[in-house]
Length: 251
Image (cartoon, rainbow, N blue to C red; front, side, top):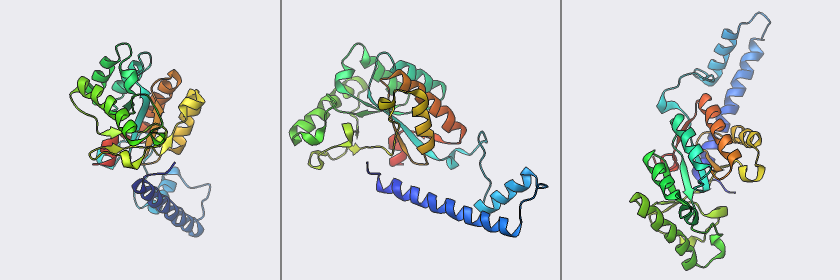
C-alpha cells in the first residue's frame, strides 16, 4: 500500500523532529546526569527544553487549532445490525467519520434511513462501488458504471452526489477516474475484517496511528464497531482530533 506523498512527507518531518528532540535530550543528560534527587517536575522541564515547548500529557487540554488531526473511515456498509450502534457511539463522542458505502447494501432492508442519518449527523458519505468489485480488473465503462450506480442511490437519498470514492482493495484504473472526484485510500489498516478481534484491532490502530493518518475500518462487524469506539476514546485522550477525510485532505 502506497501512502499519499503529502502524508509521507509529514511523517518524515515528524520522525526527523523526534530524532532531533532525542539528540538534544541526550546532550542535556550528558552534562546534567539524572540523580535520585531529581523531581518529576525537573525532568519535565528537561523534556520541555529538548522539545522547544511544553509536552502534552494524556488528558491535558489542547487548543483545537493545535490538535493533531486524523480521519476515521468505514467501508462496506451500511449494516442494519451494526451501523446504528456505531452511529450512536460516534454521536456520544461528538465524532464525525467518513463512510464509504456499497450500493447493493444501501438497497437492503431500511438502510436508506441509515444514509439519511449519517448525513444528518454530520458524517461524510463516500462511494465504495455498487457490488464491491476490483475495478482494476474491469474495463473503463464497467468501472464507471459501478461508481455511477452508487452515486445515483446516494444522491436520491441525500440530495447530493458524493465526490469521495474509495475503490475496493485500493485498486482503480486511472483512465476511469472522473474529474471532480477524490479517490481516497488509507494510511493505517486496522485489519479488523481479518482479525475479527476487538483487542487486536485496537492495539494495531493505536500503535500505528500518527498525525494526518487515514484509518481504515468496517462497520459490518460487531468487533469492529467495539474496536472503533475504543480507538476513539484512546486517541482522543492522547489529544487527537477526528475529522472527515475531506477536512483532512482539502482544508
